[in-house]
Length: 267
Ligand code: CIR
Image 1 (cartoon, protein in one colour):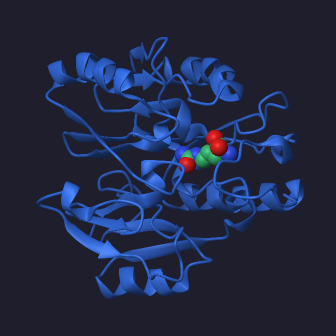
Image 2: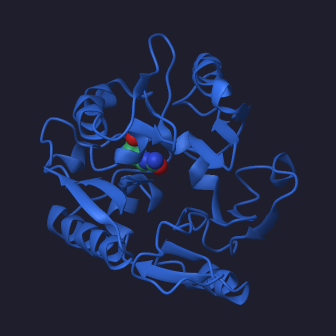
Image 3: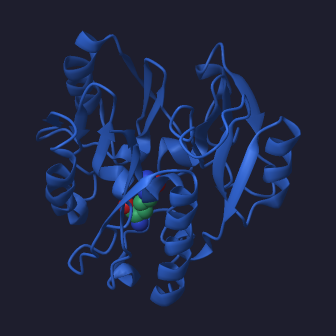
């Protein structure tokens, strides 16, 4: 059964890291409610949910994506770029240990999972303020023996690479041309977000066979996407992609998108 690791929203979320946004009021109850609906969407898609308890000492700990990269062969434990987030990884390591061997990124390298876009055996790493060339080197050492090719790409104007571009079907990426150069992803079809929805490039792709347990298997690709972006949603649907919209406005104020809130993998 496919597994989704999530973590409840920290009661300290109001003290989250912010890079490109001004601080607005984040209502914890609303964020929790939206997060539960995100978890329900994953369960409805056939995932076994491992929902970790909230961590009051780590404001950003709901964004579990940043702490690990889980591949079929192993898991990489990150060393988050924000010092306030480094302590988030230990409970994630313990959670993943029954399923994968754990390979940590070590000092002085920094890496946030939100910067790591895995497309088949190609791993694109955003050279953002949160991830660096030293991490790319360490990833190469860990992953090249398993046939992966790791390369750095430079997004601009956004927090992470996956704020700018995510995979939405086997051969298709959804992207914001203002934040990343689509030409860096040759061989992939590209869907542009609607320009009025700059944060809409972040979608959670549910690849087969991950969702085939409960769903009747079909060629149609499925993504979870923030319901606040209807124009981009229409673009996805026009390309035959099935979109499961979830409310994600409250954690967006913490610069979090839908991919940030889970780690998905096959058992
Ligand atoms: C941070 O700045 O680390 C959090 N406030 C937001 C992290 C979002 N994570 C992600 O895009 N993967």
